[in-house]
Length: 293
Image: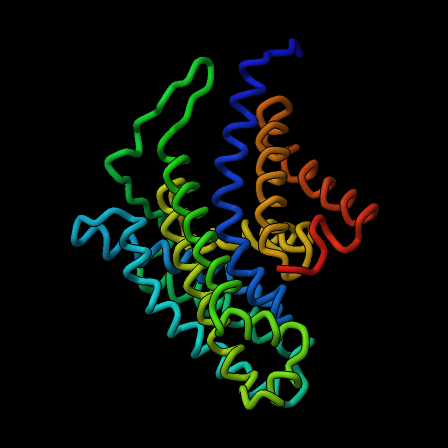
């Protein structure tokens, strides 16, 4: 294949924009999986559920999908709180969070998928904002706003999450519960309440990611299954509980996947991207940034 610098540059830029979507999707999982050690494989399903609700609500009132996701995020916070409350009551408190807890989140994932099929049908849904078909061109590089706006929106959400985790008392408590829950008890802080709040924040981020997803592409009830491997791989590659590592890994994953698809075809993209994950784990098992927020 003849080398084309313009094609390479566009592949890298498109990969970075795709990485922005992966980053906001993985940031919520970095909270629940990385910080709380909860293997929430239902996280991408929550993201897709949010996308469907954004289509329903945003389409009905004519609101931009990203703004609609912000308005719906408190609803998903409450959903996340409810899911964790049930999980803690029947699994975590008994010490059954390993295998049985994993089965619980499998069940949550399938319930969400079946619920979406029953409520909306199996067809794809989409909601195109006004800027969906606009592309900025800088030299030889194309910047489709369908990808750029959700990526910037996602990075803004991640920035707010970073400030929340590092500048607020509750955020510092979330970081502390990830390290030593018993130390919080000595400070008269209930670690279960902190975990419940953190899981709610994780679900809010799934909602934000769902709003970004529906701008980028149409969704169907099973779309979340495509993202399960990717978001977990990104969290592991970046380093458990490392938000900055998850962002770096998301961009790397997006670029590798997109450049591979550009030059060698889409079928090679997942294999090469996950190959990078294996290389990172082989030479740096703790991930790119280690276990730090």
